Amino acid sequence: MRTTIGHARRQSKKRLFKAAKGFRGNRSKNLRTVKETLLRAGVFAFRDRRVKKREFRKLWIIRINAAAHQHGMRYGEFMHGLKLSGIQLDRKMLSEMAIHDADGFKTVVDQVKLALANKPAPAAAGA
Image 1 (cartoon, one colour):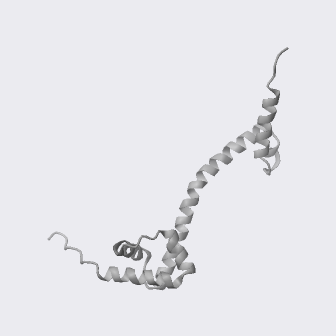
Image 2: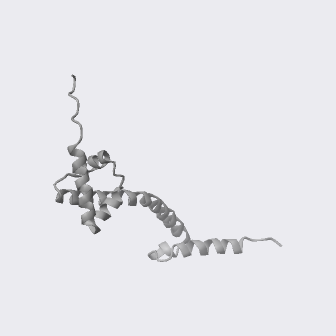
Image 3: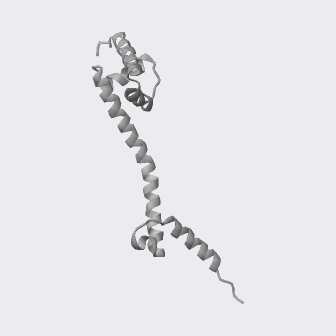
């Protein structure tokens, strides 16, 4: 008597079809199309996990820039002043402060302005 891979094949198909649940048309019913679609979905998922990080960083920068402008500073100046003042808050925390803790953000801005005011003058080029 010969053996077949019936059970293993059925389990494999079940796993694929379960993963493709909710896809439209043959993308959830036809095995070959399901395989292609799941492969493509995996590629998009991998890529977009990285894109998500970029998008959030852009959002935080936009929020910080808007909050800094309310206090008469540009984003670049603000970040430079943060470095000079030794404040080690990341963009995510600064963004949250700008939205939910305006007083705390103002305190940070004041410290940044102080650090920029006390910055030593750059040496003359070529001298």
